Amino acid sequence: MNPPLRDRLDPVAPLAAAWLGGWGVLALVSTLTGAGYPFGANDPHGGDAAGLLRLVPVSVGPPLFAAVLLTAAVAALAMTGTSIRPSRPLRTLITGYAATVALALAVVVPGMRVLALLGYAPMLIIGAPFGWPPVDYAELFTWPLFARFAALAGGMLLAGALVRWRRRVADGPAPAWTTPASAARWGRWAAWTAAVVPVLYALTRFAWLFDIPLGMTRETLAEMRADGAVWAGAGLGAFAVVGAVLTLGLVARWGERFPRWLPGLAGRPVPVLLAVVPAGLVALAVLAASLDLLAAPEFADLIREGNSAALPMALWPVWAVALAAAAYAYQLRRRA
Image (cartoon, rainbow, N blue to C red; front, side, top):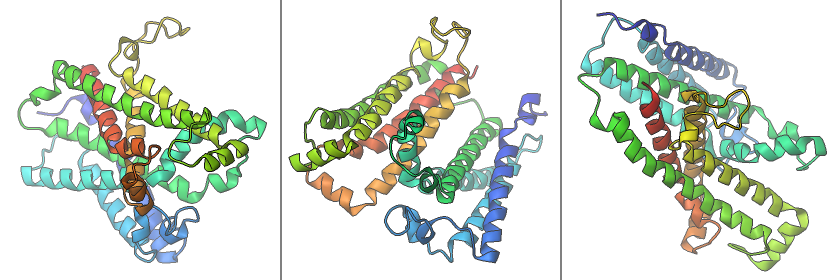
């Protein structure tokens, strides 16, 4: 039996293949020319200081990325809507490889930089006309940062293609926990967990704004108040609170239909991807930042000392997993 027309025309897998293949070709060009590799020691803002990519030598990175990306593009092509159903061993091989590559691209490559930019983005956008914060945007938006976002996009596309493909080729009925009723139950727990953690983080940043020296000395806090750094921290806290509220929308009625006070949209269904994609993006960015934190000896020292400003950040892996679960539960409830 041929798959439904919507499966045969599903653009996610071809788009993932094109994206991964294009970047794989760029990595191959970098291998041949010895130029353009943006990670590790070639990253002026990362280099040997942070990120797991510092462990990959510059001479190894380009050919490694070329091989992985081009092979992943072939795997994505194998997921395109077709009447050919691969054998079980081949399905297992494609699933394992695609899941590993998607996780590496979406979590290992982005590191802390992507979450930092997402956190500061509201301040950068609002403050740009007023010259605040005083940053050099040319130094901020660099080729290494763009490459990290490109890797994140590639990982999300490959993961999306894999999920859709597995649903088409799965043996037997879907597991009971994926039914809308079941997803509504465990999704509620996931959403509330994902909302609590960023609020705890925000409270530590708001404390600095109110002259409470959580996790630092009084002298350090005085320096932060003098140079305005506490306002940057408060901005991150405000962004975290907004994110917590939006997370609860994954289990609230207003997360399924636009509120009445939105002109032109009142009462209309919220597009599923409008909720799932941003939530998935933030979940992956938080998980990527968590890897960098956990790999940093300085952060481990702060946790051992019981630093009150760092302790909420130790919960970031929980936040990431819970947010991803809440987004998936939302998609399961509304996909019909």
